[in-house]
Length: 383
Image 1 (cartoon, helix red, strand yellow):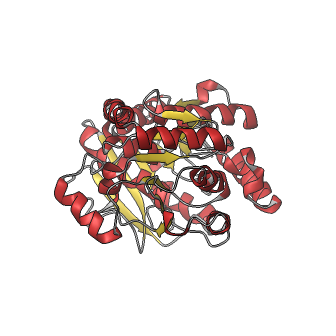
Image 2 (cartoon, rainbow, N blue to C red; image 1 turned 135 degrees about the vertical axis):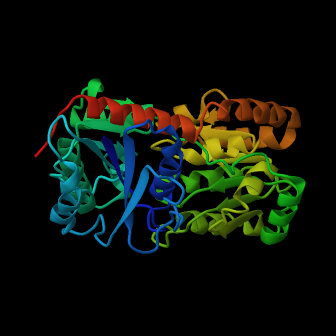
């Protein structure tokens, strides 16, 4: 029997992005298991975003609730103890542990796969304190040392791992993310419901994401301010971190008023419609691990413009208008072109839909399972 243990303790609302990764991966893995393979999930004891009956009807899948958080020191002994029954005898029972977060047990006792999303704390040091940066560097180094193989979610993350930590390419597999299945061109009825819920105008520019400094929202606001008052309004949606009010402050300084609206968190039910109905989805980030909103917007039929930031090349391909993240004038020109040339947006929508079809969670699961099988087949153990 070959056992794969997916650490799904990050499938909680505290980890919106990583949690989506875990839930989508866990959902797609079971149908791909072969005879003699089983999947075990370490799940949060409370507030999990996994369905409560996740293992029901899946005989090769078992969930194991644990109260030990990835932030708890106790995981250093509690999780290895939970993994101990799967160590078995070499050759008689093979098992692979997959950590989905760099805060993990650093002596898990099993061959280990680690997923790394980005190294923003190191590549954009201005976004965190020096203490947070030091902690991230040390904890990531420990996680990499504990792992035989690493999954990077983009070529940019792979390059950063090689440059910052000296990982050889043979230890890294790049597996880009994908939009969830409900990200698809919305129906007219769905658009009508979203318009009513968010009081959407007929035409609008859209950004969706958090407001952390590397997302570059101040430059987006400044570029938008260069447009005529007749331009479609700018809607900025997503989780709002009160520590970073600069975009709202700048919008007020520029007198944008209702032309720039901050929507706050977007209900996932309405997000595909907001994407699909926008004039242009704009993503001005300076750095991304992958830039999942870009490919989500494309899958919903949106015309997309995004920066040349590291991490976005996998998501955007050649299906988006591109601009330098600090070129305010260039970004304004992109917005102006989208507002005045409907044919450009129509072509972008078609290119985006075709590009998005290259990405699926089934592919992510297949490629992840190939990493598991390769590691299990080596017959290695760790201590």
